[in-house]
Amino acid sequence: MKRSSFITWDQLKVGAVIAASLVVLTVAVYKLGQAANLFSKRYELVAYLPNANGLRAGGIVYVAGQFAGTIKSIEFLPVDNDTTRNLRVRMAVDEGLQSQVRGDSKAKIRTLGLLGDKVVDISIGTPRYGALKSGDTISVAPSLDYEAVLAQAAGAVADMVDLTRDLRTLTNGIVEGKGTIGQLVTNRALYDQFVGTMGRANSMLAKFENPNGSFSKMLNDPALYDRFVSVVTSADSLVIALNDKNGTIGKLMRDDTLYTHIVSMAMAGDSLMKSLSNGQGLAGRLLNDPTLYDKLNKLTTDLNAILEDVRKDPRKYTKGVICVFRCK
Figure (cartoon, rainbow, N blue to C red):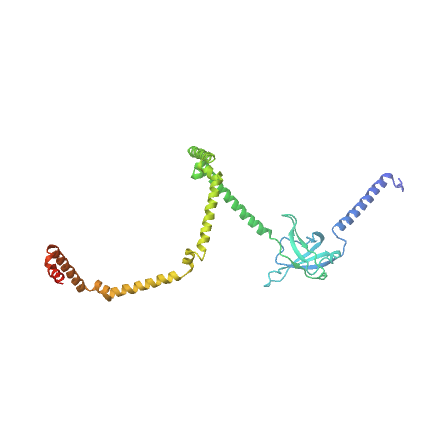
């Protein structure tokens, strides 16, 4: 049977579907390429890192948070004393952003979200520096070490667990009536005593508020305040009078004449006491010479005996005296 050379309607529909699928696939690939900058020209930048921190070849490179390229490769460098340059990272960056990446731009490793993939984010430079060219090295800024943060967070969580355990122990002790706070919470007698104390305090405050009471008058009567002000004013006047240089107290406080006289008197008294102690003069001998004391004592005794004899027989002592006066 001879095969027909005409295209049937079913075949035409199948061909149209295939053609439409190819067109859609082409447009999708083109749009995806545009979104991922797959068809844009790129230039290479190099960064040196102490460790990759989760980066991988094919990872994303951002400029100011916007997609700008990918990581071409991550290479180990020969071991040396410079531990800040253990890895060399080659990045392919869109040439359309070359004017944005300059000498003062910094590459920083950051995480997409809290636990997402690691990416390289490049900051925009300033006009003071020239744009980086292909093959140039870009500086790397220090990045946050999430492992250290998580380690600190784990320590904080452990501290919170310990604190919670201590709080539980404390609350259990309070509930069981241990300690002062526990007694206050669980002891009814302490509560009653506290209520009684508060009642007495309220009664005392009520007495304070009594308008006829002493405390109330002290708080509300202005007469006491006026008297206090008067006393303060009088004291101030007294202080002013004491500070007056023409007054007696003022002269005593400021004039050293009296002090000089007192010092002179003290020196004279000291000299007198030295003289008396040394036995100089009549007073000194009276104080220090026992012979003179004995003579004076004997003389006093003899005079007392004569006076006693005169009282007994006055004629014995006045006979010659009377004759003398009468003879004249």
